[in-house]
Image 1 (tube, rainbow, N blue to C red):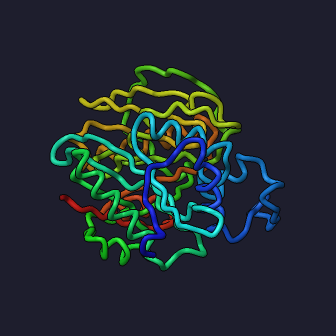
Image 2 (image 1 turned 30 degrees about the vertical axis):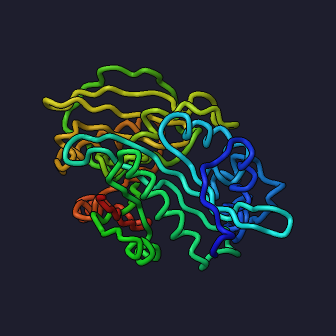
Length: 320
């Protein structure tokens, strides 16, 4: 778009309404109750109901505290704006999250979100944001640039010089079908509560360097979001399993993060046992379904439990 396009850092709070406008343009239908087919206008939805359509960026009540937290603690946000007759308008937005992981990962910049307003897609704005953030990350000392991409997004990121690193899948499992774990000991329950009234889904993610953004999000977030409470997680269980120690973080929006020692990140047996432990905890808390995010090579193992694949994603990366 020539000289009309500018890439710059996000200004808080001035740019919040602009990025919400960008993200909302990507929603085809606003649902009051998707399962029952009940649609609604944006104005008729609560901030929490808007959030469930695609994240914090869909309502100013959540976008402001989230972006303030991210830019003060773990990352940097950028916007793309174009010159209009009545001034400049934000038409694109992205968030970078930074992390320093154990060998062989090192310093990582992960593209957490990239959104271009529906009307302005196909004009090179996404390319400009990715190229700008790769350059910025390298200059800040983060040479490893990674992104999670859906199948349709992979060609775009390949054109930016990124290559596929690993395939992942999201699987849904009835907690009654998750096998019982080997005996484990609960070291500490920092906050005990019946979670069945909060969410029917708990998400288990595999911690490693390629999950930098989720990794930091779960470890460091303490954002005051309307309807969620503060901080935005409920508690942490310390577990002793064999010779290893596990930490399971239970967060209020329904996620369970499983942390295992970095050197064990490729130990499929340990990961499966961690899933079984999470399933056991879920059943005891009255949670009916478990959502898990796993590398492709583990798919047959959880599918043998009756897990259903929800969607697939690929990690792409570029090392400067």
